[in-house]
Length: 297
Image (cartoon, rainbow, N blue to C red):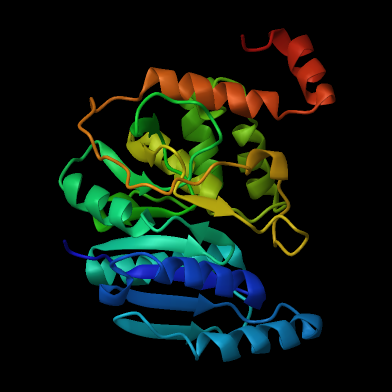
C-alpha cells in the first residue's frame, strides 16, 4: 500500500503535539510515511517560550521515514499556515493526509486514510477522506456526506484544487444556488453565519471555506464509523473556541472495513449528523430558530 505524506500543523502546545505524534507512531505504516511539520511563529512575546519549547520537541521526533520541519519566522495564523502547507505538499506529492496538534488517533487511522485515498483516487465525485465522526449511532462502517470536513482528513491535488479562499464569492454562490439550508446541515448549524464572520474578519477559518468549496462542486467526503480520532484541544489551549459538547466521541480500536457504498450522500448518516448538531444548540438558539420558522424533527 502506498503511503501518503502526512502534514501536521502546530503552534504552541507541546503536550498536545506529543500526544498526537505518539498516537500517530502507534499506527502501522508510520515508519513508511514522511511527516511534514509546519510550526507557526509566535503571535506575540507571550507565546515565544511555548513555541520554543514545542520546536525543541519537534527536533527530537523519530520513527517516521523522514521528518521535515518548517519553522515559520512570523505568525501565519492557523488558516494561512494550513492553506499554504497543504498546497505545498499536495502539489508536490499529489495527495496528503492532514492533522493538527490536538488529535489523538486510533492505531487504524493511517490504514483507513491510505486505503481511502487509493480506492477513490480517480473517483471524481469524492473530494476527501475523513477520520473523525460525531458520536452518532450508525449502522455501517463508512458513509458519504456532501462537502468536506477538517479533523483528520486526506485529499488529492484534484480535490484541493477546488478549494476557494474567497469567502464572499462562496457565500454569494451558496445563496444563488439555493444551498443555504443544505450548507447549514438542514438548519442544524449556522455555517452561513461562519462564512459571514469570515468575511467580516471576526474569525479566520479555512475549514468553513473548504466545506463551502466542496459543497458548491457537489462533492462527497467519505467518513469512517466509529471515529478514528478524538480532539483533545478543548481545554483552554485552543486558538479558536468551540463547544466541547460537539467533540466527545468513541474512538474505534478496530480496523474500518472500506466497503463499497453508492456514490451519493448517505441519507441515514446525514439525518443523524443533523440531529446531533441540532441537539448541541443552546436553548436560546433553539427558540430563535423556532421563531424564524420551525425546528428540525
